[in-house]
Amino acid sequence: MQDKDTNSNIDISLVIPVYNEEESLPELEKAISEALLNLFTYEVIFVDDGSTDTSWSVIKDLAEKNDNVRGISFHHNYGKSVALQAGFEDVKGDYIVTLDSDLQDDPNEIPEMIQMLKDGYDLVSGWKKERHDPISKTIPSKFFNYVTRKVAGIKLHDFNCGLKAYRAEVVESIYLYGELHRYIPMLAKREGYGRITEKVVKHHPRKYGKTKFGLSRFMNGFLDLVTITFVQRYLQKPMHFFGTIGVLLLIAGGFINLYMVYVKLVLGEGIGNRPLLFLGILLMVVGVQFFSTGLLGELINKNHIEKQKPRIREQV
Image (cartoon, rainbow, N blue to C red; front, side, top):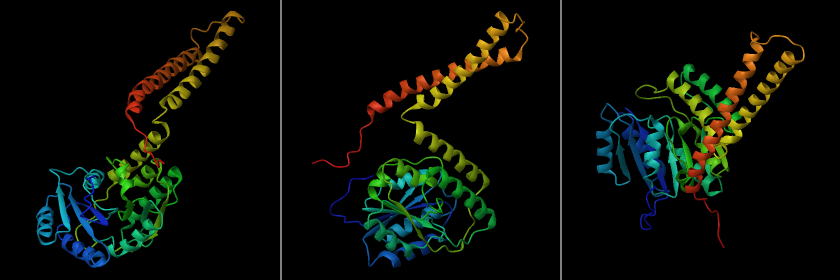
């Protein structure tokens, strides 16, 4: 994030990822101006994520006509998370708002969301309670939100909603890549910003172009959920995960092999062709591998942790 210019007095920074939305952008910029101009000082940062149409030309034209508009352009398509992160690193406002560029999010919802932040919340997420999307998108989205809600322990109905508002310090504390834009509330909560709520927002039908949603993004989202859940729980203590599994496998394999010793020495039976013997040996070998992985993780993580500095809440 850029250092705040004390003379700029920008209340809100809007970060808007753009991918092939040339027709929507002028209308969106006008709608934002009508919603915010007389209420807040603001800036709009359009992040062109490698569009193949004339979106970047439209953004440059809007920036020439309106000093509140700025733009960032990528060489190729990196994805929504990377686009948002680039915008987050360039904002100047006290509050940060993200929304999609397809005109389905309504800028008129922003003032009330900002007021909720002023009332004490760290993050306000939009909830598209009445959606204007095809069933091929709404049903997977409901399932995704249900699973994420249970895993995250955050009572939000719509993690996917692009319309969100944050205190500036929230976006300073997180880093987005992959499909992690879906899990910003989880990332914020992990960093100590747990005052998270939602607001029912108006959702408009898509006016131009076509949806960018696809099965691959749906699957990638779930894989990232697994990743972030694992990292959130075990980043600081990899031995707690790998070591526990390793010890359990070693114990199981040890008991099996002790039983095989009893069969051989006490009962006098042959064990060379018994599958149970090979299972016991396999469990012990895999157990050692898991334990070693946890130990290596601790050694690597020690370097990482020593370079970390805690975020101090307050000093007196």
